[in-house]
Length: 252
Image 1 (cartoon, rainbow, N blue to C red):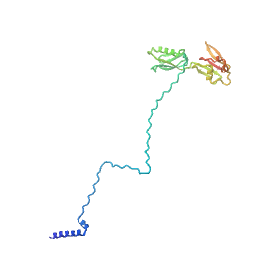
Image 2: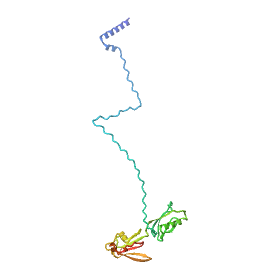
Image 3: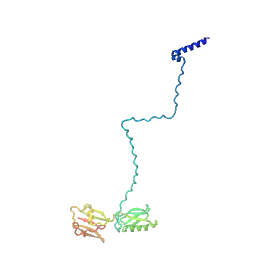
Image 4: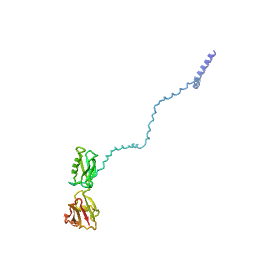
């Protein structure tokens, strides 16, 4: 009975409270359920994308990105050229090899047999395997034929070339009152006037009327006159003779 009374009293109080508009009282009596905590965000190993930074807007247009020029294509350096071989002297037709001449004997495809040889005072040259061979007094072609014959003892069909590298046997001499006296190689046709010019010309006190050319003829010395003034004046041009190996021009 008491419990029934008590329940009725509570019901009346609630009714009065509702009538009076007291929701706070009701809420005080009815406990509210606490909100559930927010769910933790799922964890992943994927990297978080970072938004690209944007350039601040300005009144001027952005400068274009600098372009890096492409490297120039490399050009292969040209192959180094071999050092040029000294030019062989011009050999006069029918040239006869003499003492001190430097010869190059070339055996085709045989470097061991090829060599340079200088004609000795006795007129001979020394070569591998063949040993000594007389060369003075022969033309290059005659010496080549002789070497081919000598080589048959050691090889068949030898292909040989004889080259005169330096002409040292054909010389002329000039002495006396010239600027550069001495021996000069006679590699081609040379006159007395040309030799004087090659020797630097006459000196100031040279006796240009009494120049002589000394020459050996049949084993005997011969003296030939040369008047420099006459020749330069267009007179007695026959005196301006072509020199021969061994001639000596004397300028007093």
